[in-house]
Image (cartoon, rainbow, N blue to C red; front, side, top):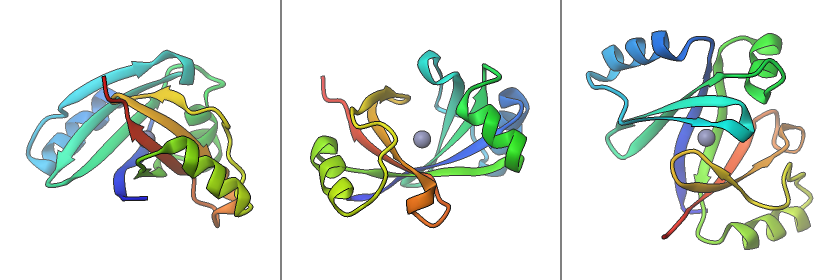
Amino acid sequence: MKKIEHIGIAVKDLEASNEVYAKLFGKQAYKTEAVESEGVKTSFFKVGKNKIELLEATKEDSPIAKFINKRGEGIHHIAFDVTDIEAEIKRLKKEGFIVLNDKPKKGADNKLVAFLHPKTTNGVLIELCQEIVS
Ligand code: ZN
């Protein structure tokens, strides 16, 4: 793993939260994107070298909706940048982590992503992401 790629925050209302975080950072989100397959709308802010992702559920049974129902708004996941996501998945499975999707899937912000079950990472949802080079 190379570095933290971004921190994901689950929000109830993306538009309202975009305003809050734009005030906080002193600038607007640099992109907003829906990921239909995950049932989310996302926005991304750059803060120096770091990124913050806000996520709002677009379906009631999406993971973000379930998270907010259970735990309320707040930090949802930490994403780490990896060079070879398939190799990382293999390595982490061997180490005993539960990978939620064995096959990397297309996530927001032009990334291939995979998630580790929080049960095996002390309650923290970990996202692996690899930039898609086109
Ligand atoms: Zn993310």
